Amino acid sequence: MASQLGPLIFKKSIGWSYENEYRVVARLSECKRVGELYFRPIEEQGENTVLKRVILGFECPLEEESVMKSLRLSGFARTQVLRAKMSQHSYEIEC
Image (spheres, rainbow, N blue to C red):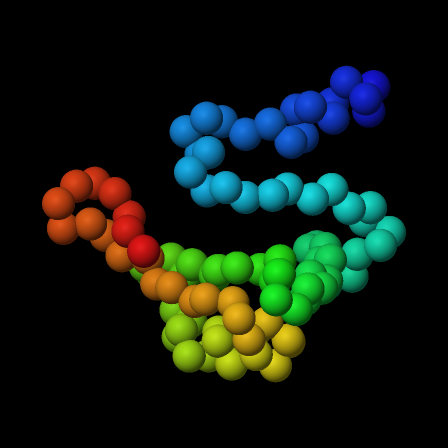
């Protein structure tokens, strides 16, 4: 059954293809559990950083500088931090 689910796990709606994201499947036993959430470390790859950009939602209470500081302390100095905002011209969100 797992082999039948494989393509579905990595399939993404064509409407989201602009995100150009990668999906990773991890064993929960290899993740750190915090309450009901599971976390898997993202390892920095030097010049070829895995984490290219963090986009904060337009209602996200976090400050960009705070997020950048946390990223730097975690070894992700090259990761860009952006704030999403509502478009002035359409019903879309811009970065």
